[in-house]
Length: 302
View 1 (cartoon, rainbow, N blue to C red):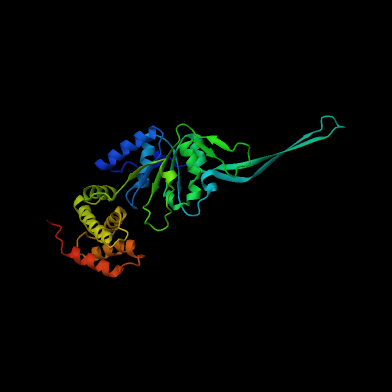
View 2: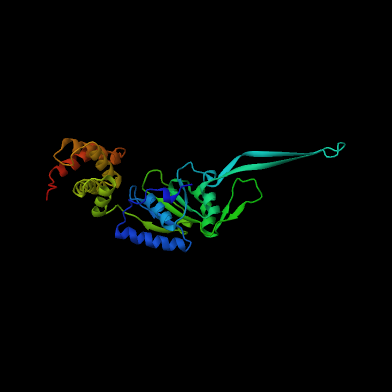
């Protein structure tokens, strides 16, 4: 069970657009509707989900989708049986023996949240198979949860009034993504998140890594250009994580953030190679060469 208060949320930085999204999301959730943050990797979907739990002052349970996820992972499962034997020999000529067997069950994150009224964060839910996610249909519509696999008489529970769900997902063009059934999408309110604008990304990089705003601006400018270049080739664009990695490594290793520095350019190459390393539609080395040759001509002093 994740506690939103325990997360490092004091450094979260919200642009005016994200502030509006948070305000609307909280409004919808308080009215009982699930929220869905959809967008490319690295735009802060998961962090934003925990931030909502923090603003609602609720504990939350968390699970990340994957193609092997099953009902057991969401609901929990049996961990064995407990046996109890009662022997009645009060009258020495009469011998009575009763045996009781009880299933031992451990609640999964969805069932735990449904019982306690917590926020359930289902991260990258469209990496799970649609048949697994069908379990959520009755939860979101009828506010009831079917306990598949439980041997007890209770097969259906009503979810707690405070129970709510935040989904996150990557675009369908990403590898390992399943198409989400319309019936599930129809039950949630979707926000489309995009990469941060340069001003916001610069502020985030500066505050999270401790580098100067000027240095953060230079790094973000490089990553932003790479993002535009990669998108023009229809391949995955680097996220803010690339900016944070470059800034953190440069700071901890005293690498000067300067395009005339060989060490800094090699650092940028290494970090920006990763998003395109597995793409068979382009030559990564050629694309990196175009990128580096372009930024060599920049003057960050202007």
